[in-house]
Length: 355
Image (cartoon, rainbow, N blue to C red; front, side, top):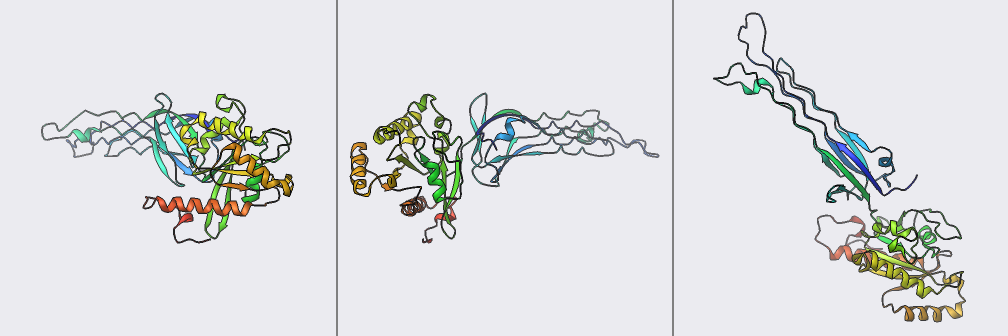
């Protein structure tokens, strides 16, 4: 399935049904009085967060969504039926904003969450509503109210705890394959990953976290070069970034220069994203002689001027991956504890859970 993280839709709730003017006509009921019923409510348009969806591709090919109008009122005190509602299923993490103003209207952050994005119009009043002691034969009625109509932009930001970033062919896809259930495409050429991939990392019983693998970044990405800049938005909701660096590039490039280019592009794109916790993951250490490995790592860290956590791994042989997983889980768990009390506590990171 094609990954689509942006779409535009037009939604229209149903108009309310018109009220009815009617009088009771029965034998021996000369002055039966008014009995015109109200119109029915127009259908609403709802958005439902569905955890089984991970793309907005359905809305690329189905842009217009109209709910049914309410039924008109009828005689004999009969009210019109309400119009049928429609429910639009969207991936968890979808942001719904107004196209004209750019204002963010809603965010779907929890599975099963349902919101009303367009409200149906109320039905009009029938003439029975206008009956009074001095107006016993009213002929007034009101039309139904129009339903809301909106032009909306849908933007998907995947919900992941950890995001992987790095140059093309840094080994991000191999890493997410090694530590999670994700199976992205892997090949020996750049830009193999064309869209984000999510993987669930199982640490223990009821203990897990979600990792997002994004297409590789290159220098100039913030100006539109390459593919990664299109998906950097998906890192904005992560709580930890893993900067994956190829310590033994096949083309002889300088890993330090590549790493600095990634950090620079991240800063240009979003200052808040640049400030997120970011750990250094030096990949492909199996390609370096054991005698030279420590010296190569020390030289890289010194030239890169990095003072945070450093992990030496080989995603291909799984060397060092377990240590990385344990450290990431403990970090996320500590973050969860620090944020308590909170309205919603993720059960995966409860204070009493142990690895």
